[in-house]
Image (cartoon, rainbow, N blue to C red; front, side, top):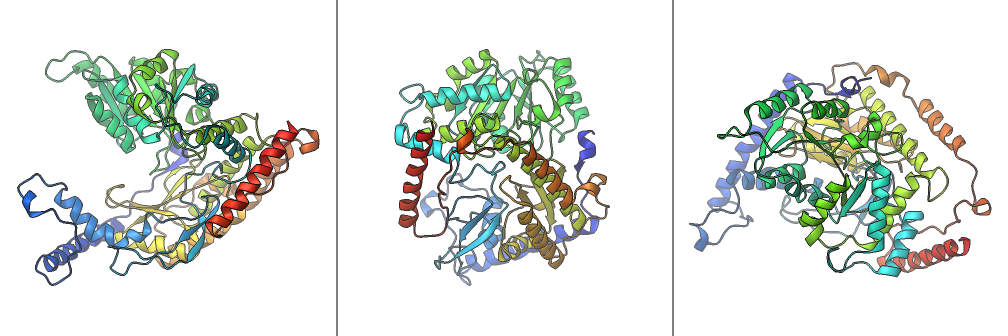
Amino acid sequence: MSVEHEEQFEPTPYVVAIITYIGYVMLAVFGHMRDFLRNHGFEKNLIATEPARTKDFVPLYQNFESFYTRNLYRRIRDCWNRPIRTCPGAEFELIDRKSPDHGWSFEYPGTHTRAINFGSYNYLGFAETDGPCADAAAAATETFGCGVGSPRAEAGNLDLHTRLEATVAEFVGAEDAIIFPMGFATNALNMPALIGKGCCVLSDELNHSSLVLGARLTGAKIKVFRHNDIADVEAKLRDAIVYGQDRTRRPFKKILIVVEGVYSMEGSVTRLPELIALKKKYKAYLYLDEAHSIGAMGPHGRGVVDYFGCDPRDVDVLMGTFTKSFGGAGGYIAGSQHLVALLRQRSHSGLYGASLPAPVAAQVVTAFQMLMGRAGPPGEGARRLKQLEVNTQYFRASLHRLGVIVYGHRTSPVVPVMIFMPGKIAAFGRETLKRGLGTVVVGYPATPIIESRARFCLSAAHSLDIIDRSVQIIDEVTSLLLMKYSRRPPPAWTAGITREWAEAQLKLVDQQRRPHGAANGGPVPRRPVECRGDPPDKVADENDAAVKDNLAAVAAAS
């Protein structure tokens, strides 16, 4: 089945679009009225202003940006940046807060709210406080400490870093790989090391801001093509080859096609086989950002390359991060040995960024090893991959049957549900949280102005019961807010995706896993490491004792 047939992008209903525009106009009108009252002393002015002595300077903020922030975003600021007090697993605890002045400031009453976590990029459930990854991170902390205090080019290169790079290269099927301490910087600071002036970048219109910034920093000519539109990519490729550089019309030195594997706001999947065919036909280069697809897509978790069965060598630059599927931090670029050797010499992020902390590197290495079946309980990596796939399709099918508009690919763990109207953005975020469901709501400028949405991120840590409870909450809230906009029947593929189907799929995976236990070489029994809402000092003492017990058990078993 083609990518187009497996993706859903139902157009915005005309009536909904008109009402949404009217809503933003009304917000803008009332915003200007409030600004008038503040400027003339009728309302207390809490806005941060520039000192009078700098009135002739270039303003620090654009007028519209500051207007939007103080009059629209600020009033619903409680829907974002919510502080949590436990690990972001299948469920978490949020610290309650109240605003006495409509979002200008917050007060913390000391209470907490337990909620299902659909907001974290914890795709494979490795954000946990117990298990092989947690044990490896604890052992690395005791051996190396929490930080290195130096870039890798100086005195910050640990054997853990070298091992992680070799593991990444093996996992994705590349000749070599290099790691970086920050995912955003992996794109933004490495693209300028690969191309520069006299080159051309073809960028998808929905690429992440790190890719947009990286492309701008290169100084290359940037051409933006319509999202996942292969015909538009080819048209712009041909124009770039035929017409060359502006003014001189000399041929471009390099042409680089930049796409994401899974798009984090749309839930869509790039059309990789067709892009590979194009780049071979026109002798271009292909840069693939697998931040949201590595570990989350494909039968072996190797991203969209694995999902489509493509050869990794056909992708010139394979980029990914450790912050989503692996419960860590940082990112990587994999490819040919020549590519990686070039980045080791020219990458600003690699040369000047602090080394990846040892506990994080140990966490990520162990997560990769579990996916490859070399660590943890036998078959645990495969079980998590299958659990995520089943959860994703079951959740998406359930939402389609509710009548809401759902964007994206049927196997994408990023699931956008369309809200559209500005007044419903905050209402949806607040009402779901009241019922025990924590998620992310997104609006302009992160999305087009009439395409506000709620974004759900699936995890292998979610059970089917959790998904059923979440769907029930979404059903209640979308009915309350009149958000069941869809006028299409559910896609045909949803017919067979039921609770019985999901249970059968997971049962089959469990049957394929061989029996295990400490006596036959399986995992060592572990004392649970708690992640709960007790006082921090009490939890720290108990967790420290539990980690030491676990490390002792592992040492004894080996």
